Amino acid sequence: MYIVSPLSQCASPEKRDKFLGHIAQIALIALATEPNCYGYAWFLSAGDNDVVEGHWLRGFEVYASPEANQVEHRASDEYKAFRIVVGEEGLLTKPSDLRFWRPTGIGFLTKRNQEVFGGQYSSAGEQYIITDEFSPKLGEKEELFDILRGVAEAALNDETVLSFWVQDRFGTETSTREEGIEDTVYIFLRCGDQASAKVFWEQTVGSKSKKVEHRNRRTTTWIGSGIGFLGR
Image (tube, rainbow, N blue to C red; front, side, top):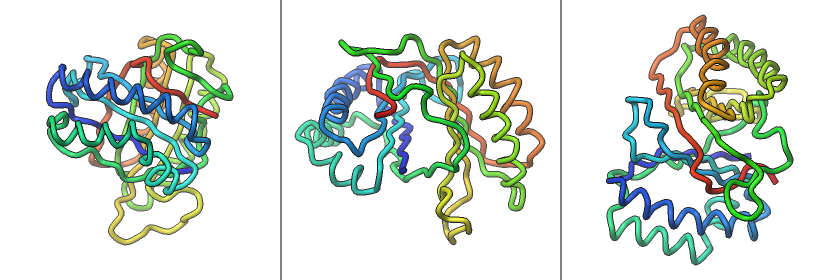
C-alpha cells in the first residue's frame, strides 16, 4: 500500500473551509468509484498544538498502488476542479508534501472493515488524532520498531484506540536504505477522544520512544472533520 498524508497549510480559515468543501466531494467519489483507494480522510487542527496553525489540515489517504493515487484518483472531474481552485484562488500558502509513505507491517489502520465519517452511512463519532514524524539515529530504527510492535499490541487491546499505524519511506518490501531518501518514521494514532489519546500516547510512544535517539521530530494533533473513510 501507498499512503499520502499531506499537511496542508491553508492560507486562512475561509480558504480552509473552501478547501474542505472540495475535499468532501472528492471523498464521496473515492468511496463510491475508486476500489483501489483504501482510505481517504481529512482532519482539522485540534487547536491545542503550537506546531501547526489552527486553520491547517491533515489528510490521510491510502492507495493500492502509485497509479491508484496519481492516475485513477486524479482523473475525476471533482479532483480536477479542486486543483484549479487551489491554484487560482491561492488556498494554500505552499504546496503540500505528496510523497508516499509505506506500511512497515506494524499496527493497523482500523479495527473495522470500514469506517465512514459523516453522511448517511456514518459509522464513527468523535475522533482525536496524533501524528508523529521523526528520524531515528542510524542503527537504532530496529530498536524503535521493536518498541512500536509492543505499542501496536497494546493498541489492539485498547478499546479507545481506533487506529495505530506505523509507516516509513521504504515499507516492508525494501529492506535497504535508498540514497537520497531520509529514514523517517511516521506514526498515526487515532482515538475516540482527546483524553484517551493523550493518556495512551504518554504511556506508550511518548515515553518509550525517548529510549531511541532521534531528530527532526514533529508531533501534531487533529480532530475529525466528518469527511472521508478508512478501510474498504
